[in-house]
Length: 380
Image (cartoon, rainbow, N blue to C red; front, side):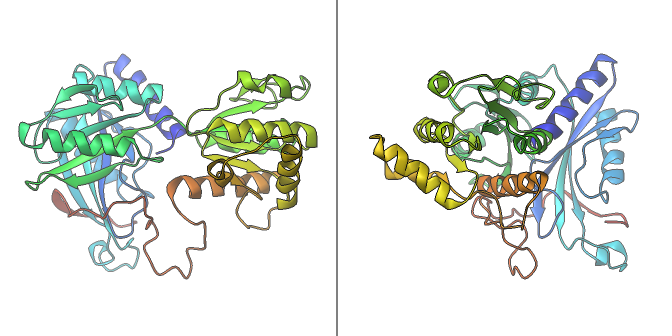
């Protein structure tokens, strides 16, 4: 789930709890074959049947709501296996060809681990929640090793090490693993929203900032021109009125994506030096590759040198090759590349691809199906 979806779910949950409503969270904990969403996707279900966010394209939600209402009533969490194959949808030829496992648990904000998990999601804090899928207990872990909650002794150390390893990844994703004794352990992950820093507040930065904000990015825009750097042009973004000589006062996040698009050679040159020295894993320069080469040559002439590791983070031109022309199209191209880069994909066509749609090195092997079997309803 992106940060925008998580925000919507948490806002609805907070409002429901303040009204005294019961609520449950349904989470995809396993995917086998083709499915609409991946592990870690969540849906909120309230005791009146209302739902926020989706687990699929619409084929699972009605069934999951019914399960969630029972979980809200009894307080007993459950894992259900939904078969999305064509045969399971009565031969109508509308199946997705895969299956998913969905865990549903009633929200108990009085539980320390649950409260800490919801707080981590709200704050965009890097953390992992570990839940055994055929047992009891849950454990929240932070990168510093601090923990809230507990797990059965026979899986505690395995789960702790697996979760901490997950948190070291550039783009940690939720996953279900099996402990040495065969216990299925789901590791959910809370991550800070990805930071997107735009050096330049020109006209073409507006659709990029707008689309990125809608996708849940933490957008920052840097420009020394007050007339360009306004909340009206960049709603939802953090604005930094900084001249090139003041860039040292701004430090990008450790996993930031930096895009240089001043359309001004002198400012671009200084911004590129700042970006490469920042340690951010992605540095992009808008425009033809010759522009980045010229900027580097100018910096070298001034005595600026960069390590091979720093230069390896530079991408130019940026964006996927979509034939984009209008600013809105260019923005879509850039964000498509950022998504592919973050998640370990190459951004190529799915048509003609022989592997699974969601097959990437960052994904663990699919776990064995969990929970009771339920055929997905027609319409999947």
